Length: 153
View 1 (cartoon, rainbow, N blue to C red):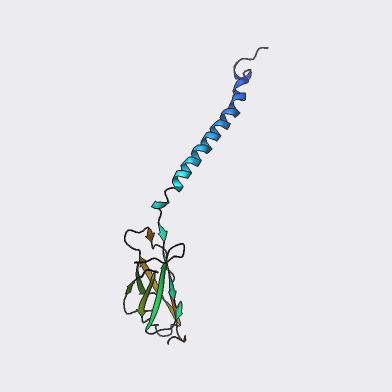
View 2 (tube, rainbow, N blue to C red):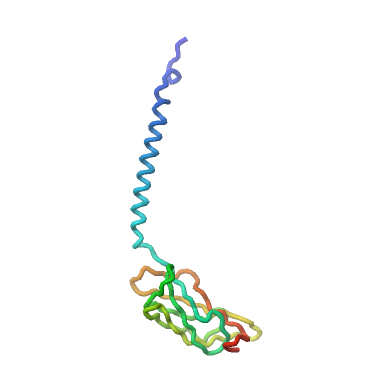
């Protein structure tokens, strides 16, 4: 009995694994080159800013709150604009300050709590320095205003 066609030809099966191994090696090498090129583009990436207020917990009434604007590595960011706004605690308006060389800014705030409101927050937004690689998209650390604290109220 004579077998015709693919059943008798065993060469295709022998060559297939070698070709797959070669294609896999070339693909992995190409992928590593592309990833290496992408890691060199870190200059196009942006970094998120945050604020670190002092004090973090305070009472109602007039007071100075110092905020430090920091990058992801914890270093202070100079020349950023900080805006303090009433969250669940009320402020008379928006207070604005600019950070110094070490990333510090002092804001004069007078938070108020409503009747039967035991606590509230003052929130901060940051406008990064012009032309920098920084952004402020996420919510920043807020100051907690609590009725009956030592600082006021």
